[in-house]
Length: 357
Image 1 (cartoon, one colour):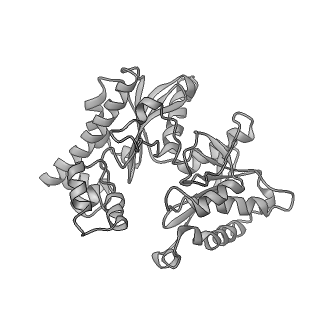
Image 2 (cartoon, helix red, strand yellow):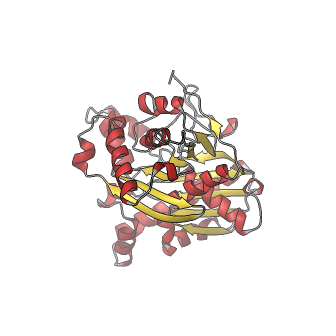
Image 3 (cartoon, helix red, strand yellow):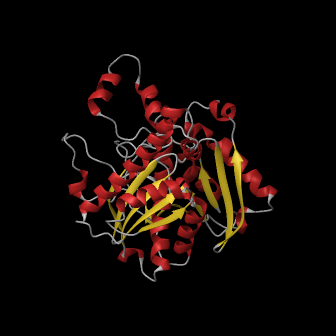
């Protein structure tokens, strides 16, 4: 069973080996989720809906061989699978890195796994958002008390890297890749011999349909101290109302591309600037390994646009060939991660809570 909670939906799927038997997107209205003060308070509400939809499809918990959930905002972890245990449930309930619906996945999976009459089912998260394998030299900032963090769309990026390796008869651990996930947020990772040794997350990198990306720091300080914003409202601007939303009031890259094609010069300029930003940060990651990159992979929803990927390819193909894998593929990626653990191809790690965040 696959679980993937988002802000306004909970996606579930049942897989038989590598084949999806069904996938369902359980929608939650703004009124429903707005009735809860904290994300963690939604746990029982969402769990009961998941169990109802499983029953509607004739799926019994005892029919399952395991559960795989999207990873929430844990403290830094390594790539791959982690067993969902009491420490992880405590962390995501009482001390997550931030509030996000993905924190609910492990809680729901743990509850369902424990309800099996034949004994507790194995349950894991896979390639959490907070995978942080950055090498020391890439962590340093200009403030001694701050370090750059590895946080991004690791699930889809690592799945794209594994697909690239598989299609070329190689192991992921042998590859040297810059991988770019382009969705509502954009993040980039340097996947070097099986480890994400550097990453550009969406608080410092390219702007995207919803995120502001990196901003001129002096102007940010002036805005933050103007008295017009508190922390919550300013975070909402950079996370949900930046990028294309800030310029055009839409988070649809497809709509902005259409506007540009219809002659809107502002849309054309901003759309090209977004592609240029992606290109610049992809090139920057290549410098970490002195250009030792065999391919640049573009993935995520925006990768469906040949125009957008073409603008990036034109600028970065001097570094390495560009490979495009459109789509987010999160449910399938989670399923394949769990399957590798069940088949003994990977070993799940054990999570230990960090209680002094």
